[in-house]
Amino acid sequence: MIRDARVEDVAAIRACVDAAYSPYIDRLDSKPAAMRVNYDALVAAGEMHVYELSGEIVSCMALHAEGEVLHIGNLAVVPAHQGAGIGSEMLVYAEEVARSDGLLELRLFTNEVMIENVEFYTNSGFFETERRVDDGFKRVFFSKPVVPVPVGQCLACDLAAGVRPLPGGLIHREQGWLVEHCVGPLGLGTLVVKPARHVTAVADLDGDEAVQMGRLLRDTAAIVTELSEPAQVYVSLWSHESGEPGHVHFVVQPIDSEAIERFGRGPDLQAAMFEANELPDPGEVAEYAERARGLFNG
Ligand SMILES: [Zn+2]
Image (cartoon, rainbow, N blue to C red; front, side, top):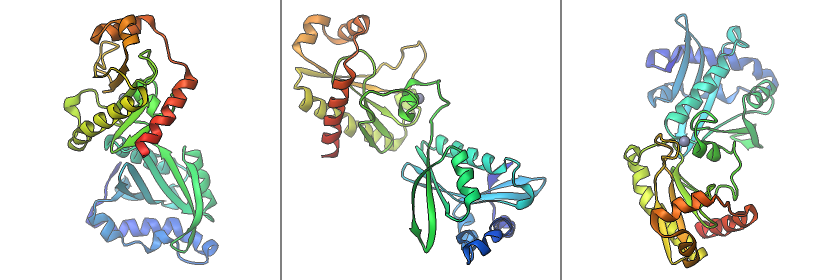
């Protein structure tokens, strides 16, 4: 069972870390960083998590959220229980914590000489982002994106996780929200604004997401206006394609007189565009997305 650490666990946490990391003292020629940590403070901050097996603490780790990232620190498994999948269970637990808190990425590092750890993280879906000296140690830094819901269950989440092709790529990310080019047949220049978290009702947005929504819809509409010089910009939200409430995604759609002539106005226009099912050219989408990206960053 993995649970939050309590004050009375601190001695067992230290013993677990010492047992796991002391074999590296020779290789490092010094005490590993994990053995110098103030675990009283981490437990008090609510950041330590332990794996309890038959009343014994066999593994521990620190989890610390910062922005959209969950940092995993000082993961340790006592040698007698290594190789039994406990470390993997700890990483899965960390990913579940990140997912339920709406975080988008896991990050951790290990020492370059701890080659077993480098291999373990690589085999656990983490990719190496850099190697550098940090705090006096030669460290290898790793990252893993957090898939908000299991792959294949939500198009919006799959696109955000990069497991389905997204023409134009991610255009903008800001405080829990993402902006992409629309993958549906709503014309070149139509952008989608959606929460990074799998939220299926506007009523379920949290306070920060709700505040951010207004600003981002305005900015996205302004950018679409600048890039397309439309007669009107529609901002609409249905998210009900399959008959079930879907991942909230606002469609920010530039409308010109040509589109009105062909497809009509308002909801009729969108229905007619879905009927016609003409997808914009991927090359043009990529070019448009690049210009939009520049305006978001400008
Ligand atoms: Zn989703």
